[in-house]
Length: 308
View 1 (cartoon, rainbow, N blue to C red):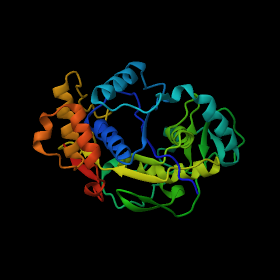
View 2: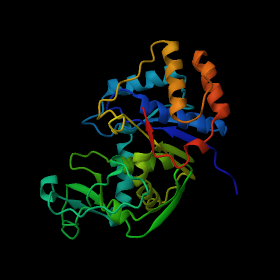
View 3: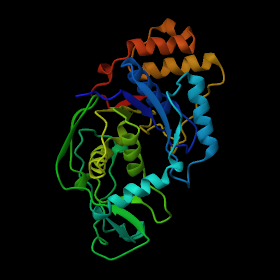
């Protein structure tokens, strides 16, 4: 049996500038995959045309360049791949249905989600389950929902351990295409990870609830799935809020090598790689070489939070 080429990726959404949490995710995925001798790809997940901006994408790519995190191939933009997603969406037609329900309609009808994770943080709160009001209606030209299976599923996470989940009870019938034509994250992400041959998927812990849905969608589309999953601890501020663009996390500054070195050193510290203090004075390239050579997931295992 031939082993697949080792490929990882960083896939930011250009809804704002990179912040320290983004840097940690990018750096972790880069160092991990390079430590294995693999290729690292960058994908811009810009299917949300209401919030994603070209200027943010340009800023993200410039910051990655300044950080020394260079992709091994051309950057993929999801906004240019809508036809591909629609083709796979058609292949899922037996598992989907159209829905006209608004958030207001569902405000008192939705069913609480059942979480299967031993992670007690508010950032992983699951959305209420859709009560399938439109399942047997003959509707067209509305948002499209995917029926996820009511079956207990498991996967092994290289950082969080063995994860059990039932997608029907934790996610329900997820929207995969909105009425305005917008493809949702889980469908586009699943298809691209498969088509790009991603074998080692490292991303934030807040995405972990989507993993069983990703496994199911890939199987339904007859596509391969990543061989390994790793969900990184979330960075939070002193108030317990996750660092994110929505929470107005401070954008990073990569305008000088000294600032880049500080950023890389700080990120490695938050990622529990224990960089020596003298390393902070070195060039960004030297810091990256040290990080790749010394990278290890073990200090992160079981961790769910990191405080900035």
